[in-house]
Image (cartoon, rainbow, N blue to C red; front, side):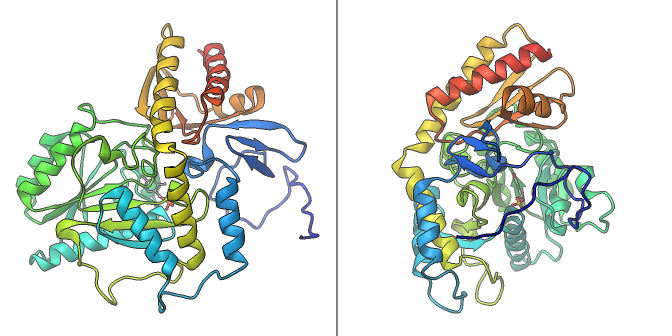
Length: 402
Ligand SMILES: *Cc1c(COP(=O)(O)O)cnc(C)c1O
């Protein structure tokens, strides 16, 4: 074991880190399931899970063992060779998604870059010289140049011109706006949307998941690719393995990351139907994509989600949390929305300060997004007892705040 001990960070200590994050002055040294611990042993209930990443909870013993064993055996050989764990991980992902082809990447943004390349290739093959993709307002698709251009948030784009001009923006959930765009832009080849907008504030479409069915119909009608960004909503988060499985449709292109590795950096872009075969030899690649270690993690995460019935658990316990919140906060001016373990509580005012109050006074880790939405992303395998613990802390917090 290592004999290096790191000195605790002093608040005013100069650091060599680029100042890209507004960090909270706390660090965790250990985690177990739904709980995080600081050096002095203080326990925090984690309703954020590293931003929808550690869906199976922290330090899951099965995942930890797979990582340790594979790290001590073989980590990486490159995509110049066959990688049986990558083939097996793809098989698993195909099984849970209904998709046909899978390309492994290392992050969400990188998966969406793959999707955007697929859309461009698709368009180019149809003879569209400068293919366009419809995206939604308040969307989040990542921080690379193409994905920040797709993102519907000015703050993400500010100062990074020129943006790529692939994208045509419509209000989320507005089918007429899509049809309108189709009339104006003959060069549209695809739509890219999140089934539920995560960073945007846990936004569900006004018509619910039938929005996805309507989008599927429009895509069929115009011969566009339907592309879903399930970076956050995937891997059991909403109470189905992928959120589109709340409907009967299947997208042509699907991206995921976050919960796919339970904290290990992996992502995937998947295709089926008319999107299959667009990226052939030499057209895409990633040195780290689908390493032996990463692929074994993906395989093990999906296998563990299945064996623990974690997706069904997310549906049942998530429903319980939403129902309880609605009942217990009924006299407050709040709106509770979301599916499974992706829950937003819309407060009547900006509430960014709740993050610190929850942490310091209730030992509860939450997030506030879109200014006034408390965002809960607990582990998808959270137990009923832990959910009651969460509710107790959260209801006390919100009651004393409003
Ligand atoms: C987090 C997220 C991304 C970006 O993922 P990174 O791994 O941070 O690049 C893209 N789309 C959605 C919907 C996300 O939630």
